[in-house]
Image (cartoon, rainbow, N blue to C red; front, side, top):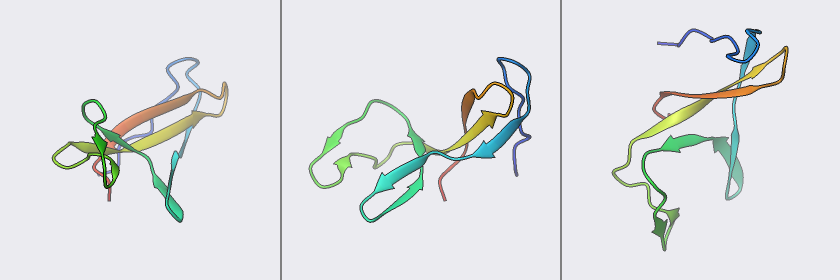
Length: 76
């Protein structure tokens, strides 16, 4: 279920949906929020196994330029 698009908490302007690009080897993916503090992993750089993750929804205010981030849905 898609979440309703919020309004800017700073100025009340309309928000347009977008995403934050997260660079990966040979490409890019939408950014994710991961619970807890980052733990180093020898093989993957950062340990993610067993941690709750949510895809980051990003919105930019068309009036003042503020960017707001929300964690609504698990990554696809």
